[in-house]
Length: 69
Image 1 (cartoon, rainbow, N blue to C red):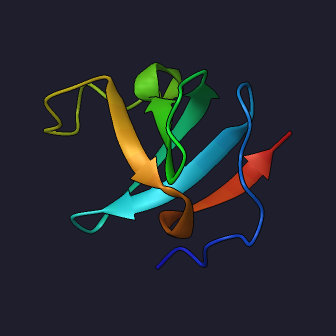
Image 2 (image 1 turned 30 degrees about the vertical axis):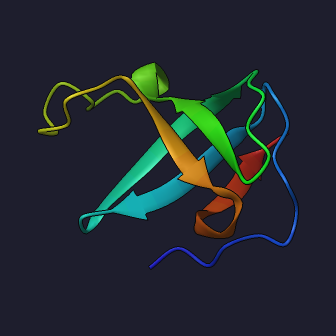
C-alpha cells in the first residue's frame, strides 16, 4: 500500500498511487483541480499490460506519493 505524502504535487512531478491493487506511476499535468491532480500514465512501461481504460486519471491529493521532482 502506498503511504501518501503530505505535500501537494505540481505539474511535471512524478507520483505513484494504488488503485484496484495495482501500483501506478505517472507525471502530473497542469489542471485547475483543487483537491486532486491529473496524472498522465503513459510513462509506465507496462501500461498496455494493465487492464486500465485510460492513459490519464484523476488522483486525490490524499492518495498519491511524490517520487520524483
